[in-house]
Image (cartoon, rainbow, N blue to C red; front, top):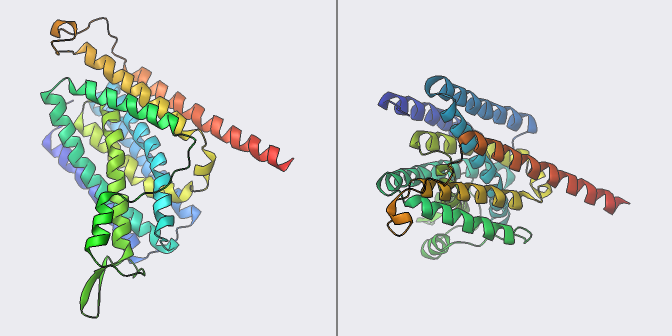
Length: 327
């Protein structure tokens, strides 16, 4: 996939414009969005991603379009799981409803910048060391097993070391001051709870990138598609937060579904690593020709099937449980 320099520039510039406009609209008028507003914006971002995939198809072919759609769907589904933690962060810090949009938007922008660094590092590692696919695959399978085992446990938000250090090192106000990150009180500069919330959102999403970046590199090795799939998934995350906040509790099998999804991609990565093997202690340093390389069409079909079954089964169970409780 040969993306010219101007293609990178135009794509990144266009995505940046959408994000900047979104940020300024929210900053100018912090509010609790209506369902109509959220739905309208979410449809816009989803449509934008679909059209971008069609452009990739037209310009570079169906294989790369399939890789983009598979990566985007995977990142979007993993982002839905992130929303559980985002909800817990908002509750833990008692963020006023009208300020939650601003906190989410700023946190997402930080996450995009940090993920950009992860994507560049991942691309450099893959180009330099083919055996990195073994590490990515093993990590995803480990994560899948861990996620499957903890799927039924109630999640709690625990402050990471960065947050604890900031709260210990810098004095903060007890109350929110709108969207301000710092204020001056009695001649002294203090951080506000909004600063800590945004830091919590950004660092938490960075931790989730440890799963999502290897996952998408299991579907495509093109940094351009990895970056755009991540950005499109994160661009719709804020709208998704407000639209399906109540629906999240009904997706009871989400963790199990994501575990299957990550396990599938992890296995795909391991097979790909065997197919391109150069480690001397495996098959004498030669590629394992018998190892199948799963095509993107199969991967895309598996992703749609896993997410579809997970959603339908979750909604069926919650509806059945509600009916049993009502009887």
